[in-house]
View (cartoon, helix red, strand yellow):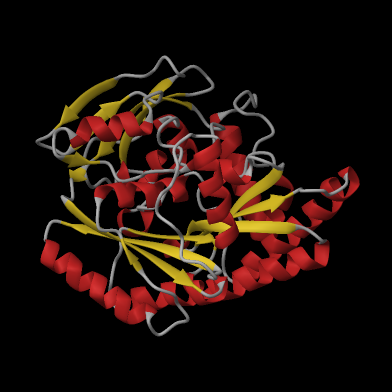
Length: 377
């Protein structure tokens, strides 16, 4: 679909845009920004990922905590069905209660139901100002506890991103040695975890007051010195660290990567449980992610592990992590989808009735099983 790469129309009056699925996410964001408009979903791979892929996985990103995920911005789409028929799934309107919601059904379907050829997105006005704080915590658990407390105070950040110290150290080295783009901003030392907290809007006074409220909340926890990013360069460097964690973690060792999601209040139990499972199964993990909406990314590191342990103990340990997640009221994926690797674990999160309903939907759309066979089920 890479040749389906045109932005067909930006409708400023109705705050909509019609695009093809091969448009790179960041290219689309920049195009609407030039007109003072905003498309919020911003996965870390936004410089290379396609909008069609974002739809297929219902991608999120740091701004999802305030603005929502990809499906929250889709009004309509043109889809080629496996039978060769071409349909529009909905209408280019803000409200639609006419029949089943086929538009939302396609979001997150991982290419198993149809081929998306056009997308109608809704847009927002672009927020003109932002404030960014780097908040260091003594432990992962303290950082996770603070997140729920921020939201209880009625503060709605545009991003609350978490990463362990190991993730930050690896990424700073990666930026220097691989990207050739050193990070001059230093992470506070002797800290176990960090939160990047961003606030955005159009009134600087309001943003500063909200930043002060965030500071008052996190001071109730075990923190170090909070860094207030005071320049565009410093903000860009801090986001560069966050958005390069995944390639940095994969830089010197093979990993298995999963994303899970739980209610925010359960994050402390989740992070502690993951580390305990790692000790039980003798593997190391590096955790980071969009904890403002409970979405944690877990990288299981191979390091010096034998082939046997990597192929047997780690998948078993991942299964235990998924069981923990479900027991905490969560589920197997917040934005990466199921694909092949999570397929064996689907019964942990869903019963057979749910799975049979989904299989039935697949059969209606794709009776011959020609689209992404073997995915999800």
